[in-house]
Image 1 (cartoon, rainbow, N blue to C red):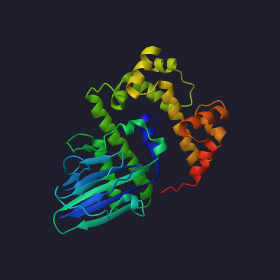
Image 2: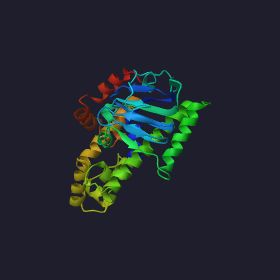
Image 3: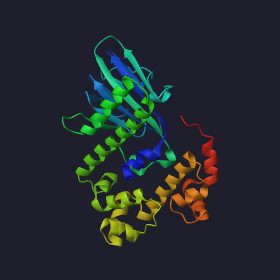
Image 4: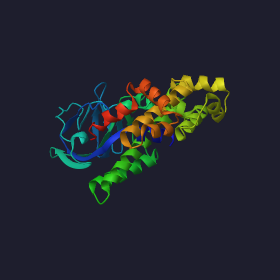
Length: 312
């Protein structure tokens, strides 16, 4: 897969949750900090205020999307000075994959769509760690039409559940996540940043190399062969990649292979030897040593430990 697809698929763990909420003024709601999660809020109807943990309140209008990639706490309210109630519609605490609720008083209505899922901290991709704690994508005519379409489909599926709704909602939340990341990185890259992941993903040379190693991580890549994909000399490619990504090319490749291995050990029945081959290691011994250096535990012990971990 390409890099953004990998970022979403390898990090998510457990089942996504979502809630469609009709708020009636006056209202104010606190959403707790959820480390190791990604949360989305979409205003489907009306308007409200985002109350971040730091900084000034942010006015939200119909169609606005808010993304909290690090699971920080925040509030939503019909008035920026509202007193916030304790959480009563937290998707992570809801028993099902989807839920609906009507909360607040009897005044003007605001409808929001809240979605989120757990992330595996050990597989956290550095591109997500580079994001700000709150991303606000205002609704603007003609901008991000694919994001708006995904929101509409998701809201309809939650409001009127049918056969297959759980699978559809799970897939659409992944799609929503991808569209948000795409919109953010494209906007940041367009601002001509000269470092970081936004710059890397819009740099033709580095993005070509990233695409190659994410599509075939088991290939015996070298700095020379990646440089050829990037259209640069070995030295020039290595320097540019390291400047933008923060790691040399082969160090990043090793980290990514071992992140894939961690997911395979946790989510499949493949043997350790099979996992080693799938991620590009010629021997189980070499793979075991590399895995232990990265994760601090042998592959076998990692699997036994995660076998006992609850998946929500």
